[in-house]
Image (cartoon, rainbow, N blue to C red):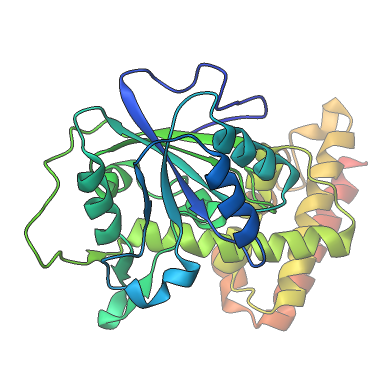
Length: 316
């Protein structure tokens, strides 16, 4: 996945050998604006209601629209503006080879509307919602994503708020040669893979992190910083911390540990009381197996004691 804060859909990023489609995802109250923008759009006949002639045909009033777009189109400019200002209807932009017909694309997209979760539970996959696309396309295994995409060659979306991609344009390529679109009814449901399930779970993790940053008045200024806190959250789970307040406390300790290392004199930066490297993340300086045996109420006390000992050694 590529990200950029200067990515513009009109700035030469649309490849001439491909056909490009906007999948416009409705938001509450955005329908009048979407219809007005579509009316002003001069895109020809390749426009369709996505849920039409699908298993979701009873939900046409909330269906996304699939719209053929070209570089410089009004509706594409409006999409970009809506994304940046976080107002109005949203969506994603996809591209297919010029040999793929509009009907073939629609058939493929409609086959991907539902997914099969574990225990044979079906669910609607809102892949045109950039907050879902951010994880479904950006975080799952690239080969599995490529198979899911089929004839779709590339996807763009504006990064979700409260994620490493916030305020960034995101773009993926499908480098696999796609098989012909399956036109034999009925289409089989896509069974969600482990990597795709884990990718969607990251949405929940990012929500917890966003709430933590707000409560702790921590300003996250880069994708790398956000990803580091994701790893801290994973470490908290590894240690057996499950209660939200305890997870928050552990994240604060990780933050303090990082800042303490930044402020150490170079003569003491590298080695703690037991010879461990203090430049490592907090969990790397802990006896994880031992902490896992402790009750949750005792885990943080042990970690704090360990940190205090290391800092006392480093400060002489």
